Image (cartoon, rainbow, N blue to C red; front, side, top):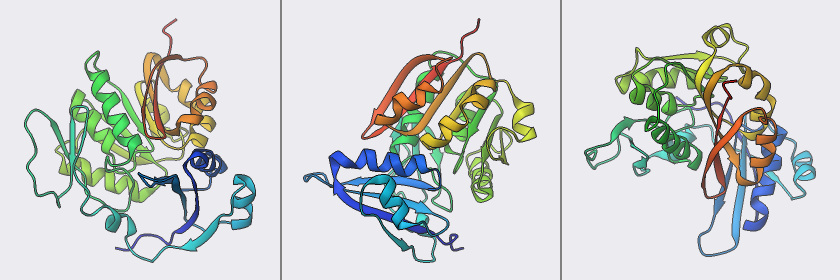
Length: 284
């Protein structure tokens, strides 16, 4: 099945300019994903943003201060093609792999088989791996009874939470295709009855609203939505609840946390230019 038509905006630049350029594209709010690719032994980098409709190259150039080029992507399942052959990922207690992996799953891990498809999140992006590592750390300290994975993509984080705590997990995404992928992956990983996936924009959906308050909420989405959704996310948390925020760049940490100043900062994890933040809602 081919993916929906996509457009790619891109710019080649120095590594020192990549994070700010990516942040400007993310904060615009219309990109489906923003990626930074860096060459390991040079100062060269490429920033790419993906869109479901053709973006205005002149506008993107203006907000970034860079010359942005826009081109259509081929009408094919580009996510699957780009992910075939990727190696397994070890993150915290988790071992994430696909059907194409020839090796065996090592002992002493929590295995998750996630197939590349029409949704983001196979564990290979730094933010997903960061969140899996955070979940592993949280599991060493406490158990959670009511978990929400906001912006679930392939459902990887929801599945990980279900495997860790053997409790029902609610997963939501604005993309109905991602919701179907999450359901399929949950069944394939033996936690189909524990993961409930729904199509929802933010937390206004009645299912998400009725499921609150949550004692663990994971939001691995872009910095822009994290700031826009901050009031509703904070309201949806139970006293003492933990909040995991990711999908943001290092230089966006201060911006994002400023919208969550009523919560207590616990820790951060970083990988490359990406960050994951862990916050706690005070009990009193």
